[in-house]
Length: 117
Image 1 (tube, rainbow, N blue to C red):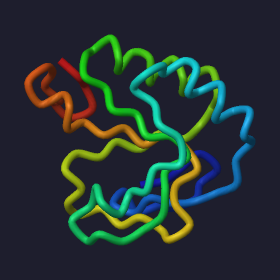
Image 2 (image 1 turned 45 degrees about the vertical axis):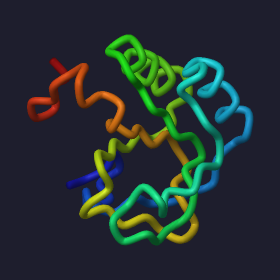
Image 3 (image 1 turned 180 degrees about the vertical axis):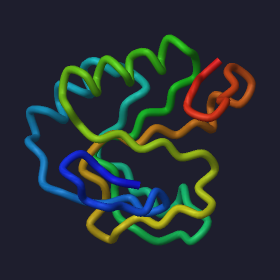
Image 4 (image 1 turned 60 degrees about the vertical axis):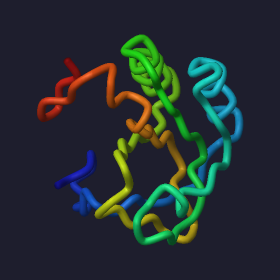
């Protein structure tokens, strides 16, 4: 998979980077109660290793997912979606963006490829 700018990435690896605290604040304001700051990701993965997410979103409805899209558009933060955390490796430095945990959506929405239905 290739990121904008042509850099190759592995879709199973969550990467790190520096981020403006004001942008994190803006994302959390948009996401509301589903957002948490600086959340350790290791407990959410089967390997139990890795650093924290700048923002962890735990949507429970399709409206919550729409807020994730709004936060991404407003801030430009990278977004990564995880399910139950298998086959995910998080860098020790964490992820400088929004991690979306879909575990709260199991009974609400269905994901078909890249489309939420």
